[in-house]
Image 1 (cartoon, rainbow, N blue to C red):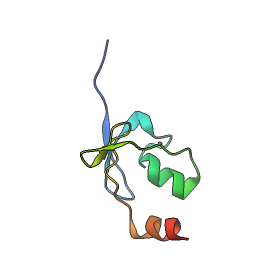
Image 2 (image 1 turned 30 degrees about the vertical axis):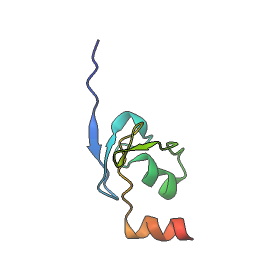
Image 3 (image 1 turned 60 degrees about the vertical axis):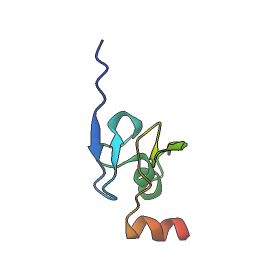
Length: 69
């Protein structure tokens, strides 16, 4: 059984994230949600990172503007 977790860096915000947690190849769940309306992770933060997807709360200026709408 392979228990290795693939970690990627988001092309938009730069945060590391668990590849299996996002529907897009190069975006974390948060960015893929705000940019392309994919389902977002329901984040549970512990020690500065989401326990589910590993997103660290980063957001690009563009995504911040979308969130503040």
